[in-house]
Length: 333
Image (cartoon, rainbow, N blue to C red; front, side, top):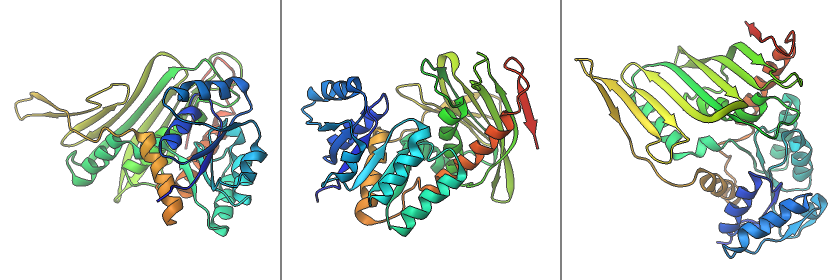
């Protein structure tokens, strides 16, 4: 069956990956970017693969395109709400990269429009489609790790393209959505926040969150650490259980998951479980097309996105009280 046709809006570093995937799935009608350089790069990078990409610099042209039934938004996060709202009101299904919006009222409004118009609204929380993450979810559900003690996610790199939002809006949506998904907890509580503005430009570029996840009547403690000033990229999730500790190192090309346990004699055993090698983004794009075709609600729906926006909006308010650019702020409740 012919897949629904989509338009990708935003062809930057991440958007071009969406262009490639939807084109290879036979679902791309047109790609849109205001930058001539970005449009030229899309043509150059896909010409070798034999993909024919139609391009425009007009968002209005996307909304009026006769073959476009869905809009995929990969623009800066402060534009997500406006573009998603216009797309929904034009009768288009919407896939929007994280975060869905920068305010909980905006997230609610988008969900209300999509529900009223019977349209799919999906958010790009990529890690919920990652085969390694879903392998870990199965392990947790089966009890292979035992009772969970602690969960920690470290996501750090060096960001050369700082915008006007903090590191938390850029990186933490991955961590919050992934940890909540793994623990089947929709509403974790943030007990403590720490953040640093190291360049004195008003942007928090190093931060951490301490969280509590209510899981089956118990409280599992967790922590997220994000940084824009670390020259060594780190993308690592650690889940401590009473039987085994699982580590997902997503910077490795193979053996991303390591399971650690000890014998009665104290000898450390390391296992490397297998999982599908499918590209997470391809699985996510395919899921969006399936939801449009079948009408089912996406795994990463507006409710999933709302909780991430709720947490980050609250954290941003707490961090806005930082006393100076060189002093950290730590808030608890």
